[in-house]
Length: 170
Image 1: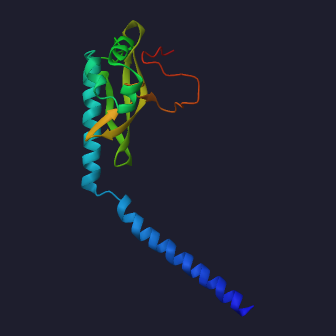
Image 2 (image 1 turned 90 degrees about the vertical axis):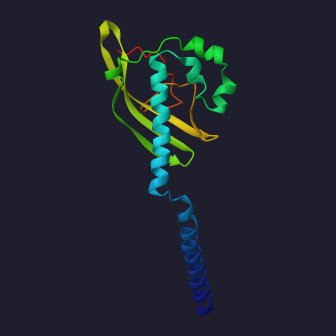
Image 3 (image 1 turned 90 degrees about the horizontal axis):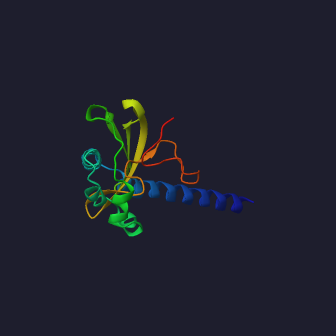
């Protein structure tokens, strides 16, 4: 009985030591310095701003170049441009409300959350919180071309398609 108790204590001690070692080894790798966080946030925000700038000017041929590799393999440039001929963003002073929030998921993936203004009927502007899932490829931040203006906050892939590039807001 005494040997069994010593064995159990030994196993728990070993597990504790392994847990502590794992925390020490992996916490250093996953922690980003404040300078790295600022660099990631700045790069993603700059790309976001550029995409909005291009969208307001209906320059979808240039937006296509910001697409991630998987997106560009799924959709041709001509098809992308023909599907997104017109950008429904509001006038410049109503396009983006507040400063976009950047959530760093990993050093190569971020989510940019912004409140965007969309043109509606009768010159009315409708605001929606959109989320841009961006990945870092070859040193550049890229977007999923299926959603060049992000997806509505709370939207799920497994639901019916409730996001349209030209949203008809009710």
